[in-house]
Length: 325
Image 1 (spheres, rainbow, N blue to C red):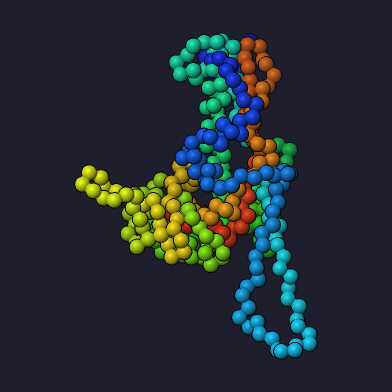
Image 2: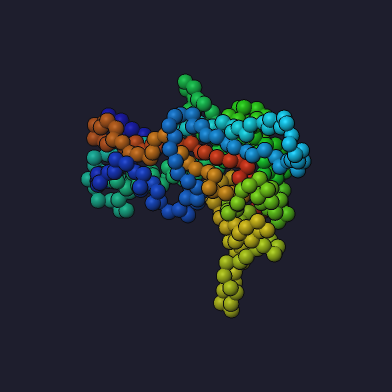
């Protein structure tokens, strides 16, 4: 009989957890800084909905006559229904009974080790997809559902390169519904501190309290070369150590941590208020045994989840940045 493709052929079936939620959460936060930063929640359906509420604009003419008989009726303050689709992701492991029984170097052929390794790979996959510029997709026969990534939500506090354009939602101009078209990438350009200042200011003006700047590796190095008054280096210079990294940015509207993320798009620099973002699970991360096939055992790691951006006005992006410029 043929061996199923990608079957590990060397490991012993140690303790296998039926629920990997705790193990998933314990994986180093430095490998998945976005998931470690934002909240965790639950979804009750494949299409996950929430409400986004904006107060009416300030009325600087709100003066009325004493004894006014018929005050005009103000428009009701109503929320907008927002949503995103849950997507299903998995990792499938097959290990032969010989591999399980063998004493291999590093034990990489054993089922328990393979499950642990695939769980780490799974978390990296999720981190990348949450930060990818992808529109939501309700799916169909033969088409997997897709959760919109963070860039597809960001409309208000944006700074884009030439030819760049904001994403759209299924509800049209009202902003309601799910992201049905991702942002249009624009012309790459160099990052400046003025871009950071502009997005942080507009986010604050819209009621947010940004606490994190998240970016790719090249952009993190670029930020460390900026010399504005808000740049704070990590450590005090001495004869033995030269500190060149910027880990904190003190803006006019609060202090932000500068966090590099190897799994996000290099061209995006996010300004985040994590209190308004969560990863919500319809099915939490789990591991299930599949039917045994001959001399091999099979395990399926899976989760069904989506990204919730409770208020896109609380987040920002400086898009189309070339970290090498």
